[in-house]
Length: 389
Ligand SMILES: *Cc1c(COP(=O)(O)O)cnc(C)c1O
Image (cartoon, rainbow, N blue to C red):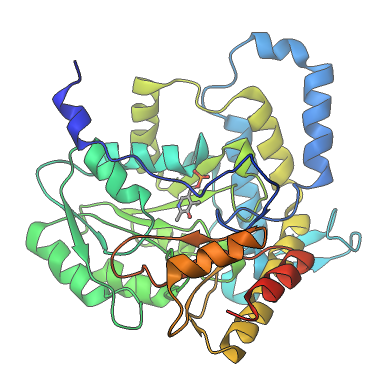
């Protein structure tokens, strides 16, 4: 009864969302803070004053949202944790925001360089469809966001998975030499998941200078706002660079399902063609409104990103004092293991104390836990749950 294509489907398994008990949820890299009050207000207003708009199709291309995203990127430089705040209230709401010196984008990001979709997972799926094909492998790290292999299977795209270095960093030389052998495109997350490690913009520049120029080079910046370096400035020099970002992590909006790509208008046009061939209206009216409001309060999210980064660094210190090996995370999660502690057993012991973290049964990382950074209170409970492990 099923098609041959179905045999290539190996669905992604997300972090569990249990209903049986209220857990502290540190297993899906969601943001522990709610969206900006401006977002809640806007959504309420949209439902009340423009409720009838829900009887109509939304803007198929989210034009106002694209403009809002472009404005936010220019305003913040694309890394919230380092954005500079002035004026405004203490929680950041209403603050004026400007990029830190090192994050300044040397051109203006325009709305035609943005594509908005139903979560960055959907954007990524369209990117795989538009730019990678069955005639040559896409080059990616062995351990990276586990949805990439799922899409490769879905679209029947072969993969060339490059092992990470022994310190968990991406082996950029090997990725490039392999990409050259088959004249292939490349994809990786920077910062990478689940390792939390990032490479600098200059390292990515060197990669781009040596990668096949006529193949698309994708950098997934889902976590960059927590302290990595954005590659948006490199768009000026590399027409094959495509950056994917999301509202789900640093913009406290996993439930809004909003993600976007930043690239040359030409590449954005191709993703739009895929979209218009599958689902004309991936972003609903309310999500467009919520997204526009989010982008208007970057100061609030900059404060959230800083709190997360602060808690992360405290937690890394705690783990290292307790004898854990922890990578240098520039994200909203940590990747850690301890000699003599089985990864799966540690996950279960922490769960017994009411806290969910993520354990992957994937060979090579099965001794590790990936733990999302929560609020100060949540991290205190977590330290308590882990102090005797
Ligand atoms: C969370 C995550 C995504 C998906 O985000 P959504 O916008 O919620 O679909 C994409 N890439 C990476 C690396 C992620 O961690």
